[in-house]
Amino acid sequence: MARNLPARPNLDHLRRQAKTLLSRLNQGDHTAARTFIDHLPAAKALSPARVRAAGFRLADAQSAIARKSGFGAWPALARHVRDLRALEGEWEFVTLEVDGAGVPGPMLGASRLLIDGDRFRTESPEGTYDGVFTIDVEASPKCIDIEFVEGPEAGNWSYGLYDLEGDALTLCLGLAGAGRPRAFVTRAGSGHALERLRRRSASRPTIVTGGTRAAVTKRLADAAPVDAAAFDVPMTPLMKRLEGEWAAVELNQNGTPMPPEWLSFGSRTTTGNETKVVFGGQVMVHAKMRIDETATPIAVDYLNLAGGQKGRVSLGILECGGDECRFLMAAPDQPRPATFSTGAGLTLSRWRKK
Image (cartoon, rainbow, N blue to C red; front, side, top):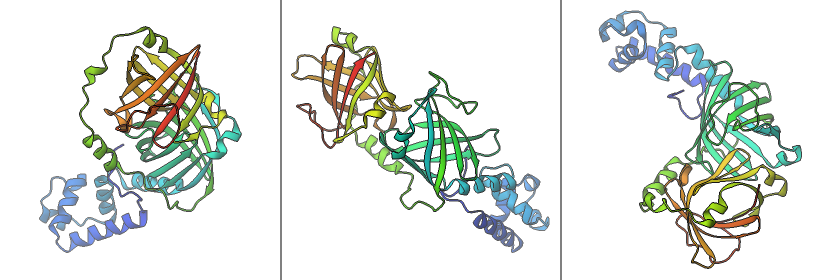
């Protein structure tokens, strides 16, 4: 759904663009003529002089603007912009269902979705997500493609469906690398989330920027190259012990504990030395591990495989006892923690084997 529109498109502005384009064509402007030739099928085979003499009207200029913007016709562009503007505002979560399991209502009060144009911010207990999205109003059901620019999912995409009726918005999204759902339903193992939201305010939010993609790119460019082969490590008894599925017992990020009622929606799955941590359908960690069992406490390194941290290494420590284990990981490029304490730049997690 590639589109060439400003961040917050305005239909009146686009109409003025079309009027200006037609006016410049009638004044003999060569660039305006080239716009018609490049984007209007009826003008494709004409010379600039013949385009100026063809008597094209405002509807033709609007069609050229629509095609230049990535749409087949002006009505499709108009519907797209109207839907974008209708999505703006602050939304509260009414219900949330992930992989067929409903999230208790009281837990949703701490989350909200903010939309301004094609920029969004989602604030929830597991993190804040900033990004941009594109909609396809011609599809049935309507489709939405989401790019996460900053936050735990930075660099990832989510593909889904949406339905908007006044102040009621329904989203069904593919999470954790899942594909686009075909209907507004979820089931166990689908990797889909069904969200029903109610508009709290129609005012344009003032804090929504969509994130800064350049910041993510710069971090990746500045990071020292990592030899991925160094993470192709042999399986040890401890590594084999870490394999399988684990349920979340505790999570503390940057000194802030996750509410206990959210923990049931977290899971950790490890195959070989590759591990993935998911909360509420969102991938928080996807990494390869290497472990130094001679260190005290045991040292663990993550080579991040996805998102904004892809290719960067996080250093941490771990301990295992009985059917539980816990990890304390520093942010990429930060020193390894020495003890199991919490604070800025640190993520402490505790898991119980399923």
